[in-house]
Length: 199
Picture 1 (cartoon, rainbow, N blue to C red):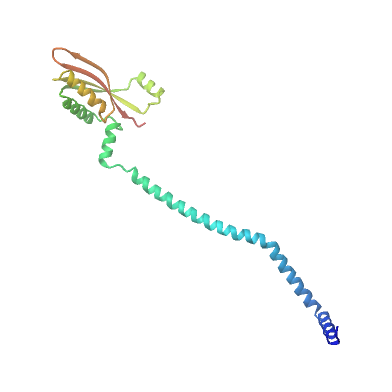
Picture 2: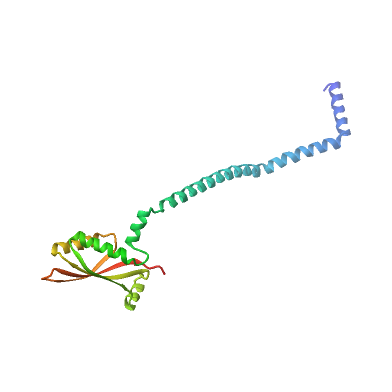
């Protein structure tokens, strides 16, 4: 080493010796910052990933909320019945007995089959045995109306047509018995018509 290089080295050592506290603080600061970054590098990376995942989840929640609102709007429109649809649904299984509609419907079926309605009587079937049997079978909300119908002015073909019309009717009708006399072409029918009983 040359003399000027030795002098520089000696001068540097003397300078460091004088500024030892400052250099110690600088070295400690560098070590502290480097260690801090090395230790926190993993958690900082996880935090950044979590922020990305959180943003993605928030976007998915917004999309799901929008889809749910769209589905609710669609379902509310889907289940809205028109006046005509409500009338038909009420004919299938009315919420309460409607004698005038029932008489009108059965008279219409009889006329279409070629009969005249001589008489019609309605009785609600609510005796204790039937009520117990309905409750046992899980039908406690289904009410029954017994209809006795006397038809005149037709023959076997008209009776067959009436039974076909009753079977294909929108109203739920069960034919329970048919009695007829040979000379006057009169038919006595017993029917059961159902309705939904709100309790």
